[in-house]
Amino acid sequence: MKKILAPSILSADFKVLGEQIRTTYDHGAEFLHFDVMDGLFVPSISFGMPVLKSIQGVSGQVMDVHLMVTEPIRYVEAFKEAGADFLTVHLEACEDVKATIDKIHECGMKAGVSIKPNTEVEQLLPIIDQVEMILIMSVEPGFGGQAFIPESLDKIRILKALLEERNLQTLIEVDGGIYHSNVKEVLDAGVDVVVAGSAVFKGDIANNVEGFVEIFKEYE
Ligand code: DX5
Ligand code: ZN
Image (cartoon, rainbow, N blue to C red):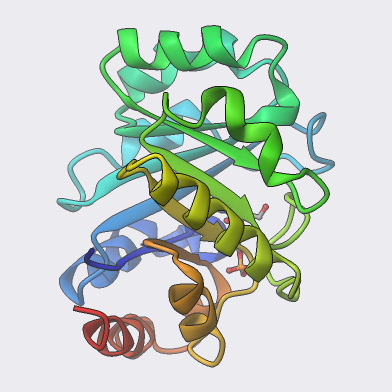
């Protein structure tokens, strides 16, 4: 399966956000990763629906929205309206994750479920065949620029095996501490969608994106 880059705008320069998004698109990033933090599920607060709405149409990217929000079911419709294509919620943040997934589907979006570094992959089993994407957090959610947690590789491998056993085409996404230097490890473990914040937006964005795309080609 083709590998996809999803730059996380958490690390972008918001003075020139539109321009930076377009640069990532023009150089081959097919998704755009949008991190929403509520100050409760994670300590920090980032941005929400109005910002997502304001970047609608800036590029042709798939809007990949990652909700680090307690009880995200409350915001499913609002994110659909703001332009989300994939809506990913945290298993740990939902009282009823099945109802949340159903609502995401009813609203016409693709559903994702994410787990934090200390949550076991097996906890996804009850919903594993109900989502289009599973996001393995490879850092504690909340901030960009953290170091990749090596144990995430085993979680990715376990998840990949569980999906293959079931013949599921579910995308595996990884988020946190990914750079050109370690991206092959996660791709080899079975990742389809790579989130990268610092590795895309710090320095020369066009070069940074092209570096990832070049590596991805080896997997085609
Ligand atoms: C962390 C966010 C990530 C973050 C990744 O809570 O979910 O998407 O932006 O940033 P880097 O790539 O800098 O680790
Ligand atoms: Zn994220």
